Length: 261
Image (cartoon, rainbow, N blue to C red):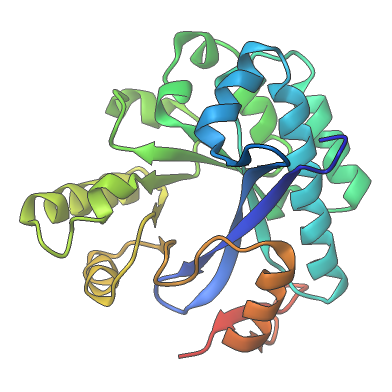
């Protein structure tokens, strides 16, 4: 991080119905001068083991909110999503650090989503603490990532301050050729809506899958069909080339971006 080898890329998330870009997920990358690009799965676990995951998370959160602030300065509302690990949720000053980052960049909590894996959310130590409720009280959204691969129950979902579910891409990738995968995705969408939650589908790579998800009522889409994860400069070029700007809706303070067809 000190040598700026750790960077982030952004992947747009769009509203299924309106094609508005509602968020970008902030994904960490490490370009090592000797070993090249180190996959996040290789170094995130290491950062956890050596007690540096909190510093990595703060670093990524700072870059995400800095990007969000630039959009706000252009009168555009576009939220950012950042992933949290289980180790971060156990850190006693996490809520204060997130609150401080939002204040430092002048970004309202409503423009930040924190993504947590299903296994983290249903962990007893997390469910028995107030950390999720305290984070939610900052006005931000909490998203359960990779849903469908863990062991959460209906009662657990109902009791947690979760705002949305992200269908794991392992289900989405096979939807266009597998009825069983489509059935699972449809069941997750219906379950989430019955609990008052919104749904994001990850791994959307083709128009058939997009159309199936739209017919199911899935709220948001993310995947290569929309865009690959992009570094900041390429994201700006993509936005200039692929998007338009809508006027702010009545009562909303900022304009919105949408993907042009």
